[in-house]
Length: 320
Length: 304
Image 1 (cartoon, rainbow over the protein chains, first blue to last red):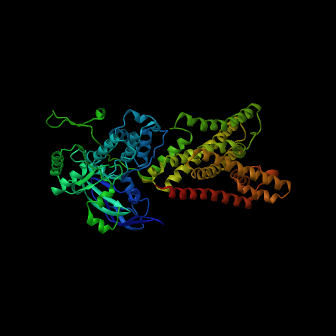
Image 2: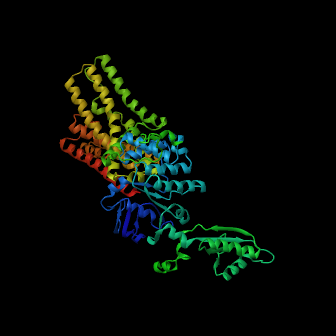
Image 3: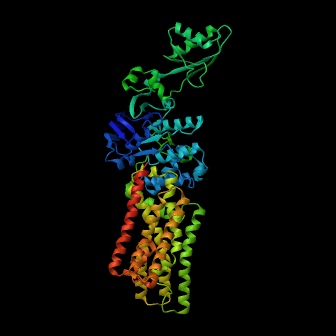
């Protein structure tokens, strides 16, 4: 679907992309990176809107340097920022955008009705967009990217500004774009956690460099981190430490997470599989402590290369 | 729910199995490409310039200005028919100059509608992530506003012309005058559309756009007229002509005086001769081209 070869983009003062080489196949691919990591720059280059300083890139087998228009006809794009005029209805707006993609008038209207229904907009689609909630606006933005039935869509931070429920719905919708609609997806986010659940493949970039590109299963296996918080008792005034020592005795190393802001007494440990959960439960029960929480940590991009992947960290030579 | 959209595929051979397809339907119809997208954008913008396809509120001003443009022409025609006059009270070429305040107001109100909205609501990236290029977008917007202005300025001329025929004025004379008037307002429309769009495309704020366009059009005309009056008082007829190059309305006035049989409205009735007229025409065309160039440059930067 997408292939780049030592793709670089340099502005006078910043290097947005630095010799990036990735190969992205069909399916849902997550592009993860902190703000300013080069995600949006990459999308611009892939749409043929911004020339690369060096290197080359292909989308759907077409070279971005000279086949930009052909690529844009078969690709959809949902920008990160607001892009909707408030004084027209979703239907009018999406019909117009469908025609801008080259759909004849009748087809544009039919596809608009279909697409808005698929993204979950019903009666409200006849009302001016200005009155929509953030979640509804995100759906309209998604609809305009899908209305011309592209082979591939670029979704730039589609969950931005959504509440947890809206976020889950959007992620579910993104999954359906591939499974039900047969359209491949490149979705960006700065939260690795939410992409793990949606994507088949995750590409992590930082500072314009490729940090890692692997299937999601690989990712979760190596990076599932458990956060544990326990109560203190008279017997163990420092419950956290007691658990840590007990775990250490059983051969599981846990690190103190209290360095993190607002973390209090939190222990972080890497889960190897089902057994780890049982072990933690048993250890805490033996000590007679109360388990306040045990949860899978949502990974922020930084953790991918600080805790679990030492070699790569050295190779990249980049701290968090 | 979605069920009302269900497609019923023909019953299978077994006869009792039906598939209700309520899922996604892919599109394999034609994709009409750039030229079609450009035309669609043109017609959408042209309609928008008269508030069509927009809210009721946004139809009021352009429609009102359109009526205000045509009413004086209708009155003149009525008078000419009633009094059995030998000629219309104004020349075809003079009409737009007389009504320039209304035209300026129209440019000021509609140029920002054409471009500022897309900038303000950041809709521009959605266009450029589609097959059209910067030049297509600019061309469509430019052509749309120029066409809207042409409709505004040519409609009263048409009223005058039909009225003149109704009053049985000389057909050849009237047709020639009408044709000259049409050429003149076509040039004026292109020029004002260019200037209006360049100014409006600088700011995403509609209010600023409106104020800036009005300011540029009235100040340039005011300054040029004043300087011409001073030159006239000092008896330097030569400089009157050259000063006229520096405001859009006097520019068109000069062009039509030199080539389209108009009477100059410059002080003292001094208009450019043929040689100077060529400079006027080149200057006008150059300005239109420059506006187009500036717009393309502006949108290259806006990009995504």
